[in-house]
Image (tube, rainbow, N blue to C red):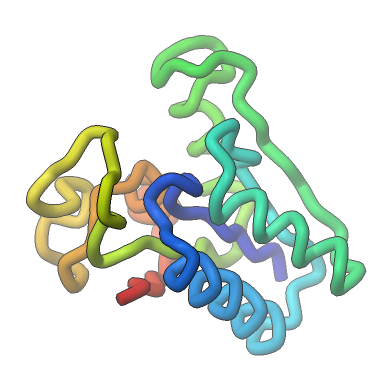
Length: 143
């Protein structure tokens, strides 16, 4: 099984929620016993990178779809990268936070507009868009 593990960038986690996210990655690896971890190698760190690190620890091969351009619509930008993750995974696991950490300075939204209420409340993530495109998404919302 090719397990895509994606989610929020590092800045959307604090120490506690980061530890919980890393635990969820480990649980998924144990539960699904993937033959490959698929990652988007986010330039902003976070879930993608932590999944890659866990793959090394567990000796699981990786397929990494890193964006060449840090724009949505650019050639091999985030949209192209996310579509490759969606089509290259048998299951896409999305790890996101319910609430942003104190002092977070990035863009904020009331809800994840990709999920449109189909999941419990969590902060917006492009990972959700990817999972919906895949048709095989599962969510872990870190509280």
